[in-house]
Length: 491
Ligand code: G6P
Image (cartoon, rainbow, N blue to C red; front, side):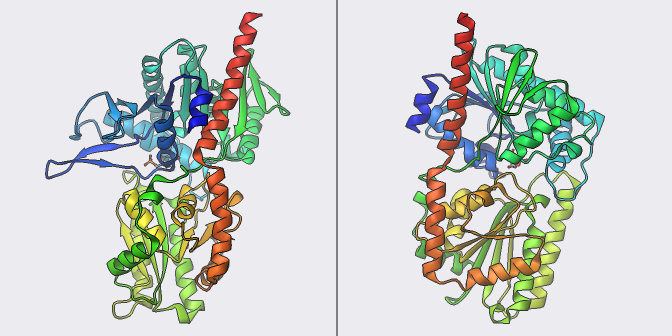
């Protein structure tokens, strides 16, 4: 945190991200509730913002006509601590539908994830997307101080914004981070606005992805669809005398981790969660934590649990898998269908293997605050992250952070960015139910010594490659870009 502040040399940063770090809502009883949204982006960036202060510009949650606590455009957060500013941009229903549900989540999200969901591209959605990107670029320009601010643009909701911000603030240092995978050039080319998106992103000074593969895919896309000079050695794209560096920065979580530090000791968590779930002392607990999203492989996960019970009958009656699933983007038909599909599947498996009070699958389809999530992560024998495709996946890292006791086994999809760092997890192909069920059984039978050895190694990795390191690397690269800019102005 200190290194971060030093790297900034007193500069204030403005972050642009669609999601707010805190959602203030008035419940039916009239009381104000503050929620931490289920979002990897928020998990990673919020501690960075606490360390840097500055301003977070976001879409004010909830449709424009819903009763929120207040309608102030600018508030201080976190509640009670107030270490940075939150600027909220309120969107109309049409804007939210076209920009967020439409182009971002029915277009770009399936375009970038290999999960067999066809992207929908509608002209009206793209128009709203461009319009909303413009509105946010205006808001960023209002929030900055000085002529050469540092602006951190986040994720696929804002592919056009970097260029728009550059037009408004030509001397700004714009670091854009793409939190989801970037597909290969052929796939990217099916988007009717492929050039607009690339041009928009190239307004950045630095463009970051989780992996080198995604950087390569982006540079290939520029090569395919634009006239630009590409310096592959430096990983830079030059256009009109301006350079955009393309770099990989694997994202992470805060360490020491606030939620892990605050959670009760593991034995207490285990006792409480086992009691809540009605499990006996000999029971074995698996846990999954996700937004209800088709990229997370939740159905494949439940099928792997079913296959485990089929193949390893001694686990039937003993092994319970608790899936915490936060409903997400439910205005989109595909997500609603997934909600129903997961519910049906859990019921079928429970009918097949359940008996008496034993239910192999406990599906909790609700938002869970981080404190509750960490309690479950600490109580579990195994955590299974089965994403079909995932830029990073921070739940895997949170599980590691939760286990100060060095117990518990992580079963992790190879198709996550996290699998490149957490190599001591049991890595699986989530589509391969034989492999996944064998890994679950191995995890449930693993000796305490082997669990500790694996967890110890993973904890060392996450402790070192924490989110401050992630932000520090980007800001250090930005400082070099700024320095070079200042020197060349002197010539
Ligand atoms: C992914 C995206 C984030 C997003 C999060 C939650 O992690 O990369 O940008 O915030 O999903 O999705 P939501 O649509 O609820 O913000």
